[in-house]
Image (cartoon, rainbow, N blue to C red; front, side, top):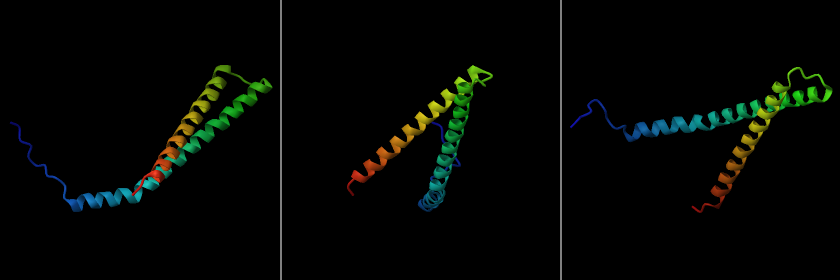
Length: 99
């Protein structure tokens, strides 16, 4: 039988300290990640609009790159909409939960 030495279970006080530390920064970190993701989607949408404008005016240099920019923006927008839908569903579910 293998014995593992040097390991001990964390105390309740240690766990509470970790919980307080995570809860104080967890919401801010999530908000920061969400904000950066929204900014990225916005930048991709702007690039996509530029690519569409270049296609419409005939100024496009590389059709493949323009199509890639449009496709990337579309996929990222769909992903952001799915994340929003999941968050709204979770919020509604929490509202229906009885305490």
